[in-house]
Image 1 (cartoon, rainbow, N blue to C red):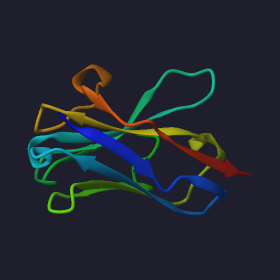
Image 2 (image 1 turned 180 degrees about the vertical axis):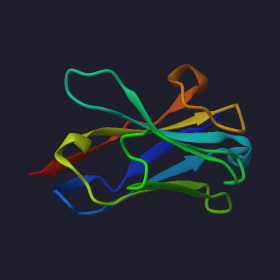
Image 3 (image 1 turned 90 degrees about the vertical axis):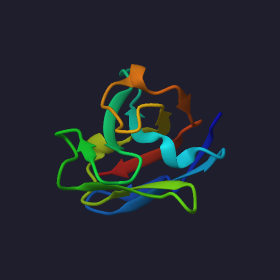
Length: 124
């Protein structure tokens, strides 16, 4: 079993940067594919980025490609989302998720464990 806790959200001006962190518990963290999703008010939760168990493969939504970077540190049991050039449309609650698919995935149904989320607000 994996428990996930996100941190690093906040209020930032458009064009600014934030780094989200997700701390995981559990002995088998390094075997999980990890992902970040987000949910804006009135919208469905959507895929943002994912990373395979060893960091060798990453996936990004088209809307964040070139601006966001996902990474992980298996020794520290953490996964990160570096967000640059933020836009008001990036405003959402951001969720960290773990998948038993070690190669990660872009679909919500592939993820079994979820954090509580962290709010990111980008002002124009």
